[in-house]
Structure formats: structure tokens, C-alpha cells
Image 1 (tube, rainbow, N blue to C red):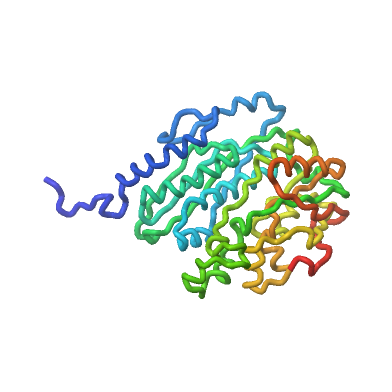
Image 2 (cartoon, helix red, strand yellow):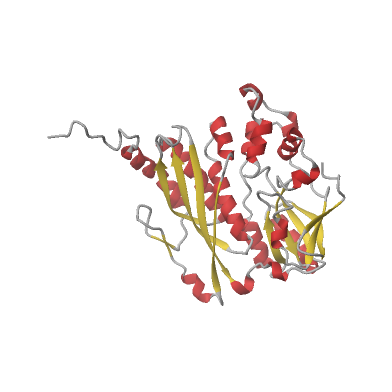
Length: 357
């Protein structure tokens, strides 16, 4: 006889049937990212990936990275667009491990939702799949977790984890940086995924829905929400192409994320040099300028808050700088010579102060 006081999992707020639908809805996306090294299929307790190629390396190193999207998700939820934030999730991880020169091999995601909706989940994971395709890594696993009573029904959060591979003799290494090296900046697509707690506060809060959704000339015809939702640019394929075409041309690189140029470029420096950045040598994307103006940021604060239009800064051998720029241009990247390496103490310094904003 059934216990009249029993409570099912579904009654507690977790829909197993909808979870099965969600898995079915993402299968094609997952399969579209597979590389020959993927073993098996989704649905197991662990993702399998062959690293037989490492046998041909002198000293293979696995490189890992993990990150999330943060409060940019609130913009996606406000706009009702969920198929791009997955690109941001992958970008933040693969761009980080690219700083070692690593090739991203595989990616795993974690999606937490208040109430599972298979159609919405398909859009979210669709973005993750697109990020994996752009970076050439396989989506080999993940987790969809329903959190009733902890999260609002329409709320969700994303985190991810990637693993890459690099041969130690070909690794990008700050210790290889020398005085006289050239700084080459790669254009960002906008704010990427950083500084959104501030950006949302000054750009979104206090504005009507119509004001947030209307096209603006100062945002190149985009609305505020659209401009804020532009996905993070993924630099893996062009940078790795340069590493193949111009061996040794890139000494080190910095992924410009939270903390801006000031607090990321120094991570690519040894202790005996400084990076001297020439302000005003690259354009600031409209959405970045808009956020800085709305927050009334000083130039110094802006430089340690947002990427200011540079998603990556490469530290390049001056003898090969033109070849590196040509290879990047051929790969579709917009580049700027933004400074040089000088004697110092592992710090970022700025020339032409006042020229940026």
C-alpha cells in the first residue's frame, strides 16, 4: 500500500523527465564538437579523451582552467537571449590556458537552474557548443543541476572547466620576455565577461525597459542590452596559428580579464622588466566607452576594471613582430602596436596618460 505521506522527487521540484528531454535536446550540439580523440559518448560517469598524441612530444604538459560567466548572465536573462553566454563560458577558460600556448582538448560544463526547461537548456548548451567549435575543443561532459528553493525558477548559473596540452619546449613563458620586445594588442569584441557588476549598475539600473532596448547611435546602432551581451572573442585558433607559422615570435601573452590591463599584463612579465603601454594607440569599443562614461571612471580606474578594447596583449620578439602581425591579420584579427618591454620590476606602466579617455 502506498504511503500517503510520501513525497516524490518531482513534488520536491526536480523533474527527472524534463532532465531526460534536456539531455536529448543537447546531443547534436555535443556531437558537433567531437574530435577524433573522444572515446564513447555522453551519458557515462566520466568523459574519455585519448592523449596518444602526447607520445610524440618531448615533455607534454596538461594545462587546466576553470571559470564562469558571472553577472553577465543577468543581462542575458533580462534580454531573454540565452544562446551566447555559453560562448563566454568557453572563452574565459580557453583564452586563459592559451596564455601557456596550450591547445584546448576538451571542455566540461556545469549548469545550475532554478527550474529545468529543456528548450532553454538547449540554447544555453548550444552557446557552449559554439564556443567549443570556435576553439577546437570537444565538449565531453557536463552536469545539469536543478536547484528548486535555492534559485528562482528562471535563474541559472554557468561554470566550466577545460584541459589543454602543450609541449614544454614550445610553451609560452614570461621568463622568455626580454627588454625591447614589442606589445601587440588584439581587439576585444566589447566588455567580454568582466566588470559586469559595475556595468550593470551604471548602464542598466534605473533605466526603463524601452530605454534599455532602443537602438543607440553611441552604441553603433545596438541597444544597451545587446551591446552588453556581445560574446567574448575566442583567440585560440589565430594565436596558435601564429605559433605554428612564426615559431618563437610570441614570447608570452596576457588574457585581459577582470582587473583590466593593469592587473593582467603584469602576469606575463618576469621580475626584471616592465610593460610600457602607449595609451591612445588603439580604439575603445563603444560599449566600453559608454560604461566608463556612465561610471565616471578615471583613466586609471578604467584600466584596472575593463579590458578597454584589448582582449589579449602579446609580447613579441621585435625581429618577428611584422610576421606575427601579418599572420594575425590573415587569421582575421585586428591588431595594434601598443607598447614595449623596458627595464623594470615586473610592473605595467603607461605613456601618454590622458590619451585613452
